[in-house]
Image (cartoon, rainbow, N blue to C red; front, side):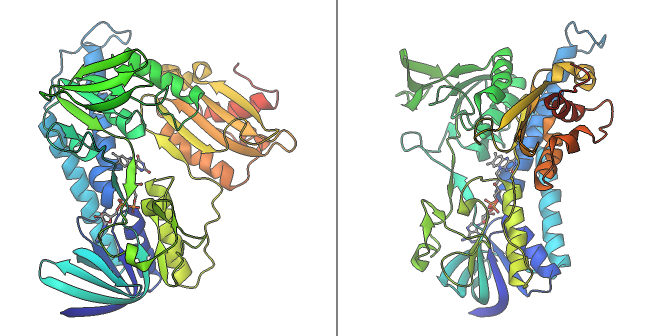
Length: 459
Ligand code: FAD
């Protein structure tokens, strides 16, 4: 059997694993990354990037459709058509370019890349089944970056018309009727795009509102827009199984049984960490529920074994996995890196988008909240979308900013300013006195800080 040795072995080349591999290579650590599928993991192949490509195409299509009728902009266009197979091929091309880029970046960092399924033998040894047969890799340090996979409902297993987000992002035709089980961010991002592409979308959500993990004020404009797009919401409703002939999703709501005729049923009820079937459980690591427990260096309970990304729990986000990957590489290189982040921004690419960073209103005792609406922002008006607002949670004693949130069209691009404000320990005056370019959406951040200080100008 072929054998190799290295100082650092990373299992999984998602955003956690590949970033760890690049940073380790930059720091001169002899590193091998093992990946069973393609570089880039869930994020590049079947997650963040493909979903945002689909959302972009759907937005373009919806805009064109709006120009086919009466519109205040004076633009007229003929009725557009969508060839989803072509859209998906375009998306695949982006994925290919990005995953190819990851492979090149690892190479440039002199990190070795092995394609194959890794099986952990012990904390220092892994066996990999490659296309050329099994090989063995011994290491001084190991990083578990095996990510997560879609959660399956026992009564609605993935097969045939019951699909996960992975298949939904690869559909060759827009389904006429799409039922979505789970109104979290993944279901709503894909559902909104499909509704814009012409599908009749129905969402079944167990909680009393969509996006239950976000606070109610932030989700109201999203619910309003879903209604506008003709998406049917069955809230406080439990999806059960398919009808006997498979033509409908059967559910149970507050008013009794619900039958939802559907061509596809997309199940997006969460994601489960990948911890089984590759020897990880035999290591007997301390777990945190279904996730691998880690400390502030991303170290597990076994010396020399680290874990990063979705396998370590919430928030399951690509940028958190990447930040953890950097910390582990730098820690192994002897640098003073530690998880001391003040906040992990979370963005929901629904319509409108939602951004949350840091504390929510009332989460910290004595905190106060200031809100500024996009309706009073000139740039929003020129973009024809002025629903939503920016909100700052702050400590009234010392003006310290504790949390920043927004719901509105295009607010994902403000998330960097939000995260920076928290990391830098910004006060309301810091934000209020920073010149924000006009006309931009970011002026609402400045204005909401000014409002809290009693000196808002445009409201
Ligand atoms: P993953 O990306 O899951 O990568 C793990 C890798 O490990 C996989 O490639 C897998 O093949 C490999 N692997 C597993 N076991 C083995 C083994 N035994 N041997 C070898 N290789 C193995 N996050 C955001 O931040 N923003 C978004 O907009 C966003 N949108 C999303 C949209 C969708 C539809 C989905 C599904 C997810 C989205 N996410 C988003 C979440 C994001 O994709 C994950 O948080 C991120 O990919 C986690 O990175 P990771 O490195 O922990 O794991």
